[in-house]
Amino acid sequence: GLSLQAILETVEQAPVAISITDTRANILYVNSAFEELTGYSRDEICGQNESVLSCKTTPLELYRTLWRTIQSGKEWRGTLINRNKAGQRYLAEVTVAPVLDAQRNITNFLGMHRDISVIH
Ligand code: FAD
Image (cartoon, rainbow, N blue to C red):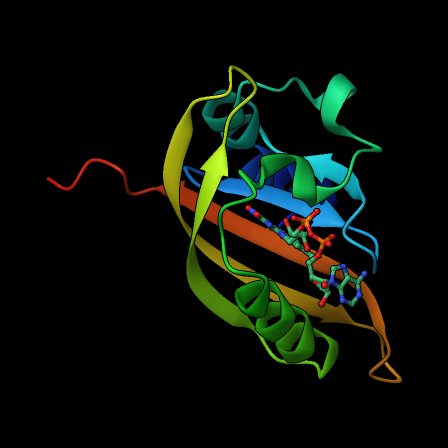
């Protein structure tokens, strides 16, 4: 099979912005596409909350639904208005999924998003 190093390189080079957080959305890891899309380097974004990406215009109810869904162990998909480091807004197609251990406890969340501002 694949070595752990090869799996890591695959996540690192995946052509979608990937972040892994703790159970409160504090960022622990981002891949290279995340750095490129958001303008944040991994050193400056790790330790911050995913809410730094929020441009604060998304209705609160949407975030409540997101959290209710992921805390019940399911994945959530939706469109959020995000803000990059420079303060520019972009439309993000976001998937957030819980990562479960063998006892089905949520240990982390996985976030994946892409910029859909420009429709081809
Ligand atoms: P807040 O006041 O922090 O939250 C708004 C509402 O969300 C709260 O009233 C509450 O109902 C709920 N909520 C927030 N934190 C928690 C918690 N720890 N437990 C239970 N309920 C909670 N947001 C984006 O805007 N863009 C993203 O790209 C994005 N990606 C995410 C990726 C992952 C892996 C995860 C786990 C979350 C992501 N979020 C993202 C959601 C983000 O964590 C914030 O909840 C959101 O940005 C709202 O932040 P806020 O400061 O505006 O409002």
